[in-house]
Length: 513
Image (cartoon, rainbow, N blue to C red):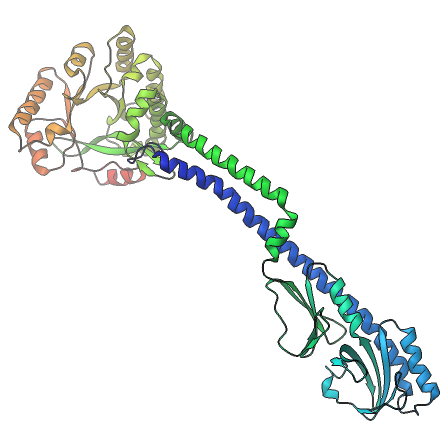
């Protein structure tokens, strides 16, 4: 915002903001791509885990069917017919490597060794009495086997899946994710070795999924850094696009800062957003101290800077010609805010509004004042236009007609900051004014500077000789108030009686005065 106390930003600040504006889309783009990659990998590993469970369920379905077919033979002699039945299940059922029979927790008949293989069964080796992931047997040591056990009373039938099928499934289910098969405390990964240590936790997109039909689960995931590797492999075009938009955003931020550095642009934006609002400072009668009116002061309620001081934007608005529409908007807001409370005003309540040389170039001001007065009951308020002297008002036929039309409406004219501007005495000679407003710099020297007091006394005397009303601004002490009252000053204004307030607070204060 260019109209702050700090002034325009330094080049280093502008370039830093441009650089940050360019980096922000890049950083956000990379973060979004990273999140998208994480989400994609999580979906991928979730699908991998589901596919792994589906594959292992299918394998175990075959072993379960084999065990169910053989269970009635358990307890019968391990003759040729029984051995043939065992081998038939091995050949008929995919994934089934070997089948065995047990009686009273003792294996006595095998598809591999017939009746020559005897071994006790420990049910605790099996999860839920059904599944055991074991690290080989005497025939194939150090080779994974997944054994399915079906028991009914003393009868038992076993069917096992070779580790080759298990590791092959773990290896081929996904190109990117690592998959681990877990049965009880034991687990198996793609290297084919059964481990009894803690199941590994994957750094990226870890998924744990248990089978709904058998007592096992799978863990799927990816190692550290896989997200970035995935992004480099899949998103090169997106990276280029993110960098392009980052550079574009940086250039745009630089252009906007240069554009926003033009005060006129910021003032026009604020005017369109109705950010210029009225504040009201009371004006009291010199003899009774009763509130006789108020001066309307323009404030800028900036959305980021808060209230902006008038001296930071009023001169700028005058220079660029925006002071006229800003004053018009201020008059409309003032009428809208004060009219509902006008019944609380004393008759002829003075409402002072500042105008400048820009307002005196045409007769539009007359219509603005007519519209303002139409919001009130006739006689309720007196509109006082205060001529500021930052710019010289040149007397022309237009200005004379303007002031005549304003007086015809009942609008009064005051010279603001009398004695400090371009040509106060010339204004008295050329324009039909009603009030003089003594500048606060003279009031502040009461009791402190004899020369300023003499000037003040001369202004008061002059106003009396010209039959003009007089208002003293900047009254802050009781001493100043008493002195001005003794000199017959009509109206007083300053912090001693009240600071500029927004409408709601002003109306509340008015009730007690």
